[in-house]
Image (cartoon, rainbow, N blue to C red):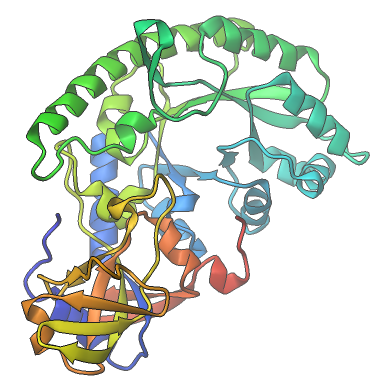
Length: 401
């Protein structure tokens, strides 16, 4: 686990003393340091910011103003269009969509069509988009997604997310030819997200054998993927010589993916906030930048306090690693019979006896941007002051999923 710097709790308490909890903060010194570390690890390749891991326009603008960052990787078509209308000029939608209204907007607006690239991995998606054009004739920019999963024993064992059905270079090239032959579409990029490396920590506390097995798997997976991705890029470039980008990676695999000659840009976003799921990596160490505070509202007994709410589980396979963790003061833990509750959360441990009614407990969320679905504002901290308060997507009335 990332340990807080000396004095962090006092700084955060002083900075937010005038505010009511629950509340969420971003420590800008940590945010900027994490951004610098991502750029260092990318070794000269531009980083496309994954918006789902940030979910705050002000912070997207802040990071994209820094050298080394270029473009956004979005997660829904409605979000992509909203960001493009807000002035973001290069938005790659990372997932296929079935948004009838969104595709009609995209096909009918030349500025939107130039700013947004959509994800395709099946000819049926082209049919869907054409059916949603509503008379719009703009050319739709298309990115093809490569399945990056690692397969063993002839495919009987699969490690990696179930995303694109396009695995072999010939399959991507065939779809590229289909797109090229269809009026109203143009292939501009290839994407491959190796989540089994970028999103899986390789240093699990108290589990050295499993950690070693993960590292061996990831090394083998990256070697296989690098060769297959290079071949896929060559195959698609034979069909689309003016391919604009090849996107790969994620926070946990920035330097490994950047080392591939075929990759032209890296995707990352969680590494800006550094949620708890990114504590378990040997290849980098970030600074927790996004936290939330819950007020102490009860003292049920010795070694116990109760805070208001806090039951904010993250997406993914259900388990303890999807829960927020009490961070400050150090040494608090959940009651195993109650866990993190919807309206109240008991916390156990020696530090509980030093907490008074109204004091704050600071938590770290399990996944990055999902925290912003719980709060309508982020208080930006510099030193021991809140220097700005900015809306999250939720605060702007935007809940895309």
